[in-house]
Length: 274
Image 1: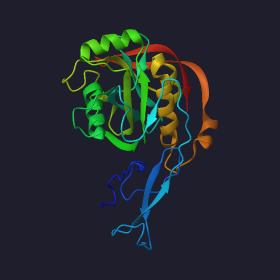
Image 2: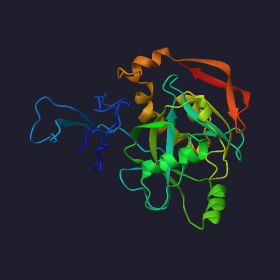
Image 3: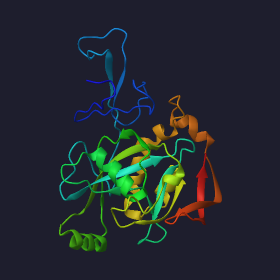
């Protein structure tokens, strides 16, 4: 097995540090991780032939909220399979968020349904490209379980009529990517393959992404941020979140947003900045 291949079982997921292989050991967070590191003395039980050994942390401490259900490999029945993309700006530690064309004053991260048989990470990259035009993104982590939310009844009826289905809501597998390109690459017209969904975009602190999400997605968004935040805040030295939280402060400030045509606008949004 190659040193940079993602190792996966029903409960184990690898998270790299976003730099060149081999993967460096990272702190053991709440996400179940399988971390590969160079071993000077390969053991017969836990090392592969290339000298990399595996260390495992299983430390999920979670109680499901009212709108959130959890499972590992398979989404629960009655929910539409979906992928979500958390795109982080490595310089500002901010998260990409965009405002919906059809839902005023609502912001969200990119998401979408995988094609039949499509690899979920590939689906996440495709949805990111289709909705934002972004192709310069580096995979950092995958949530170890599915997160679900229920549609409010009017939305459920409308979407099921459109899809010809009977879904209660969506089951999402979330992926964390690091943006590696220039902002000029971001284009809400996407790659032209799908109808645009967003009218403005900006970078937001994790807390603000949750605050401005539509109400029925808030529990899922909070869980996504709880899972990924240690890696989002990692400055290259694998510092824990409690070491960075003291640098956070809240202030009321205008946020510059970018529109579909590339123009800018000023929105009055309460920002929490690093």
